[in-house]
Image (cartoon, rainbow, N blue to C red):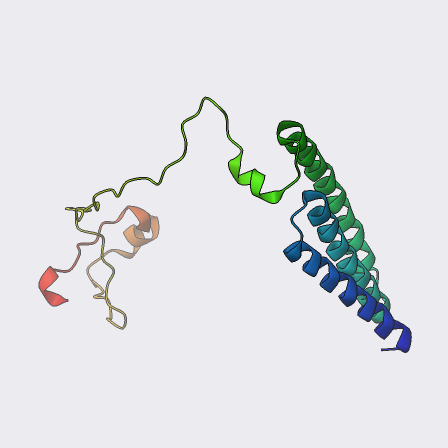
Length: 164
């Protein structure tokens, strides 16, 4: 790692930390979205630096993909912020919890439902032979029939329940 790489990693970490602090402390929606973008740019700078340190282009390809997703996120976030501002004339985060249609009833906590009792199935499940048992080989079974019989269609009886 060279001195330049260390500086780039430090700047990327500082951008991410500043964005995280802004995301946690701010209440304005636009500043929250800007803080998220700052965090994404810190991560992209770190990815580019690691790609440069290892001598491959994976950091650049991840950064291009991440910035594309960030641009879509910014466009959707801006449209939501504009919609909220048109309805409430404020950009406070607490107003998001108060958004609802005027003709819908208010949400209330659902009542407790009685516990559901599931019945056990009445049919017996198919059983496999125990591991390590040597199968009984019938010497009287014709070899020609064994070669022509489809083993998927042969039914074998299940052992009685008292053996387990």
